[in-house]
Length: 438
Image (tube, rainbow, N blue to C red; front, top):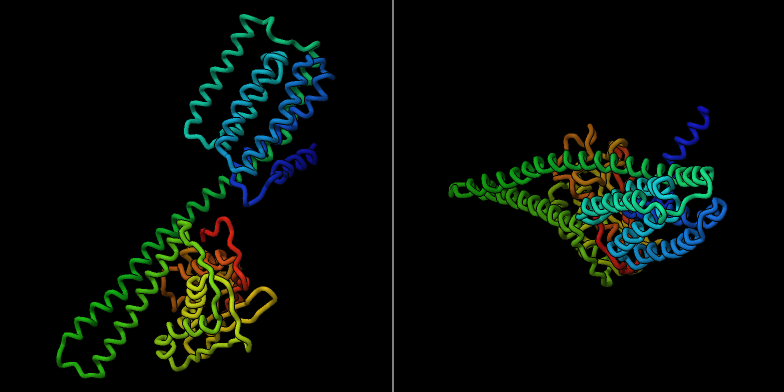
């Protein structure tokens, strides 16, 4: 018995058809409801004659077997979600009424089916008026009881009590076998989503606090040194150093604001891809030019470009590709106090592998899995002394890379530097929906 219980527990926790990240929990529950409907009505074509139920019950089951796949096609293939679920709701009411009238009334399987389907309906309903639907179903059941009470001759009875019990047992087993796994799965998904929402809210709160600090710091520097420049007695060398500080903090502030804007667009699915042929050589030199001040500010770090021998062009969004490489190169220069930062690429079939390699402080192993998450800093002792920014740069890079149909990863060891890889297709192929949240 213990082994049987363990097997069933494993079954209800693991056995879920249609389980896929591309299906929302509402879609999953609806598809499972249709599956259970097909199973019940399909097997009823066999059990109804065996249990001695009238021919009308078998014909009703036959209609349901063919009509349910049509509802699935309407939702899955045509995208008519609201239509499909409303049609199923009407079909469900007719089915329950038919089962009640043709299969023993309240003594048959109608009540078991109603309770089982209603539980699934609460998950897959996309209507804001679902509570009115529940009220209607309640009155429908009350009406069926009234028919059975006052006009019992309208109810088709089972030929024997044994047939009735076997039919109820059959329907009950179907729901236990196929409904419980998806309910358990939905529970895990909802708990996971709740935990992620709590985590996300905490991260956003931390992000807002950190963002206000990151904005105030360069603004205070800009305003403070701008006031000092009003002193007409400053030596030219001192004045130039103040101007450099203002310029550097202005660029840092602009980078921060650009990252916030880019992140907001990705989150709102408002980052359309505008693809055109782009020279990789020109892209690299554009990134190098934009970081020229940062490159020249630290003579102990050499910035090097490694370009392919043959001119290489890719069909992609030039602005997104630039922002990805610019963010990666900017981070590499920021976290490298001495040594080298190299940006290069190589063609691999119909893909191009870009990389940004540095000899900086590296990333702690426990931080690598979370480094591309939004609002995340590569914390720990390795980067503890070099934390700057709002924790959006790498999340933006990952989001933009996904939009360009590529992938991104990192190899790093503490105090040994990091290498960020971005693999993009040579030719971007437009999709129906080319927006993606990070």
